[in-house]
Length: 193
Image (cartoon, rainbow, N blue to C red; front, side, top):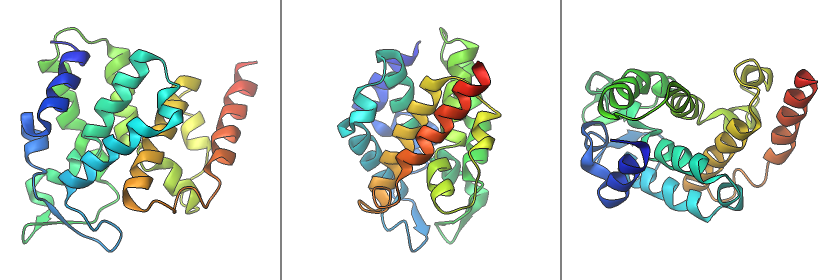
C-alpha cells in the first residue's frame, strides 16, 4: 500500500515481486559482475545499510534509497535482453527498468506521491553515475541539470557507493568519489544562490 510496506515485503522476501523474481539466479556475461544479479543486489542492500552516508540520511530518504537498491538492476531481468540465460552487459539497463518501476510504483503502491516516484526513478536510472564519473564517462552537470536537491545527491551517492562496494570493495574508495560529491553539492548551492 505504501513505500514502507514495499520495503518490508522486499526485506522479508526479495523475490516477492515479478521484477525481482526475474533476477533469481540470473547470470551476467561480464568480467566485472561475478555474482548472479540477485546475489549482487542483496549484497548492495547489505553494503548500503553499513555505510555512514546511508545512515546519516533522513528516515524517509533511507526508505527510498533502500527500495532503490533492491530495484536498481531490475532492467537486467527483461527477457529480450537475455542471451542463452545470461544477461548481456548493457549500460542501458537502468532505462529498461523505468517502465517496470512506473508500473510497480504508479499502480501497485496506493499511497505514493509523484515526488517519491520520481526519486526512485532517479536513483535507479542513475545508480551507476558516480562510477561513470570516476571512469570519465560522465560529467557532474548531467546530475545538476536534473536535480537541485542535496538530499537526492546524498541518496544517489549512498546507492552508487554500495553498488560499487558489492562489485569491488576497493574500486570506489581508491578513486576519491567524495571530490565529485562535493563538486556536485557546490554546483547545486551556487545555482540556488
